[in-house]
Image (cartoon, rainbow, N blue to C red):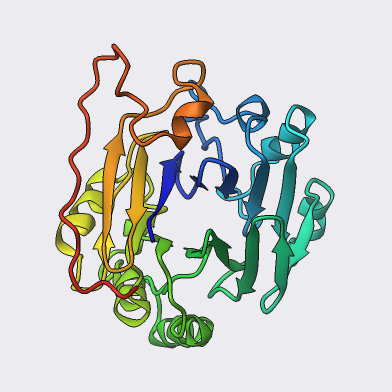
Length: 293
């Protein structure tokens, strides 16, 4: 069996994943300085898909952007799925199907389960075409080693271990997880623990606060026998990821900008094959041996 997903990075912790028919958007945020101004995601773009699911995993400023709730004016095929534990102020601005840890939703084309995090909101496991997509949200080992007291570090570790306990049993094909260098020493401890315990087939770091080198270096050195790591670091940079029973391969595509690449290209094997665009086409990774099916 072979399934291809297109993963697009937007900014900070914002991603989309699509099989060409169903389109998933996770925690889209335009940025503190409107970094997505030149290439925003819009409702017009989403209108071409059969179903669109827009997720807001928590109501922190860098995960909660009110603009997403305008998209359904031009894309009525959108369903919003939001964390159920937002504060009162954000509840007035958000709308959608609410999920709290432990909740399940079965919607057209997807199954969704919500897990706890070690901070706010929920983490999400979305099943699309039989593939398990995990979005961590604010799940991480928030330990701040150089600044926190021993008791604060221990509390952070307990919160992380408690949230991770049910997640460690999962089969995950694609994971998006924080890698926050602001924490100083051992900033990658949460990501390392997730990779070693869950063994996702493909891991994409997020929330690296503008430090592209952090994501790229982690991808270079962090891969294991069971997990490949892919860094997407430019707004709208894409990867076409092909899953087979015992291997994955991917192609890195140049950023797909609004009005420059048609929506139909998302469903094609090579959207630039018949194009005159001056782009450097990707290189497939070698099939990974030993990945769990």
